[in-house]
Amino acid sequence: MKYREAAAAAVLIGLLTMASSSARAETPDEFGKRLNGLLDAGKLSEASACWDMPGFIDLVTRNVAAPPGAQQGFAKGLGNLPMQLYGRLAQERGATGSYKYLHMVKRDGEDRPIFRFITDQGLLNYHELITVSDAQGSTKVRDLYVYITGETIGQTVRRQYTRVMLEQAKDIAADPSVKAFDDLNAARAANDHAKVLAIYDALPPKLKKEKAFSIIRVSSAMNVDDAAYERALVEHINMFGQDATVSLMSIDLHLLKKDYARAMANLDEVDKAVGGDPYLDVMRANVCAMSGEKDKVIPLAKRALEREPTLFPAADIILTDALERKDYVLSLELMLRIEREMNFRFGDYAAVPAFAEFARSPQNEQFLAQRPKQ
Image (cartoon, rainbow, N blue to C red; front, side):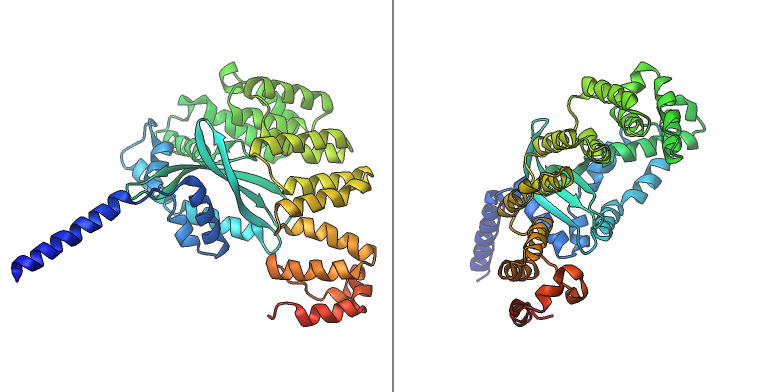
């Protein structure tokens, strides 16, 4: 009997070992979809567990001299970073924003999942995930590249870590980049953009070639004058190539100046960098509305909605147009689609002037009868 039990146990162990060894590792694309699902479901703890924190901490602290115990203390404080990140994303996304996995992009020889982030204020950003596989074949986030800052979270945190370690060692002058970065940020925070440019111009050549410094310069030059902006932009592109960060920053500037052609060019540059994004067609539609090319607005919005069927801002443009044209059959179709598929519910829409006549139409009664129950 004992022999048979031992033999059965050996067979079971063998089967488990075979299953474990033959399990297929999760691809970065599958991981992107899984992480998107966790975040959509509000499972922030599970999403945070998808980070390789030992690997991230190594990226931040590697080769930076630290007083005894200081590295461990800093690393402990970083433990909650993913939870803080995803909590802030959820807060800034609000009721009308989104955080959506788009697809894979090839960067530096790696396949990276890319997410689009739209805040409830309509601000646009993208995140590229730098991933690794753990011993169990699961994909983990090692770092995250933030388009609007032009660097990874690891690079941003490493700069903070270096500063803290130098302060504790009372040797802040050992790394001139720390003070230079502090000075640039202080001037920018005070909206003294001319001072930002003066500080940058006085930097040694090595620091001028740091991407984070150049991006601060470009963002401030936008607020000085066209000549300063052009010079900063050209020199940035010469050093780093056409940069999606600068293109993102430039869109609003060109819209304010009513330079719609350059705003469109910026959108094309971002579109190329991220490997295609239907939301950029929504932005193109808005630019066309501002420039007076109204005949292009609805085709662009429809193209965006065809490419991404749950893209609320695209549906909203088409709905607004349908209401203006009193096409209440299409309005009904869109309102039902928005509530059923886009995680949005119309509130007291009858009190909104644009919906007033629809609210008195037969289609409104159909909408009230067919809309999802609360």
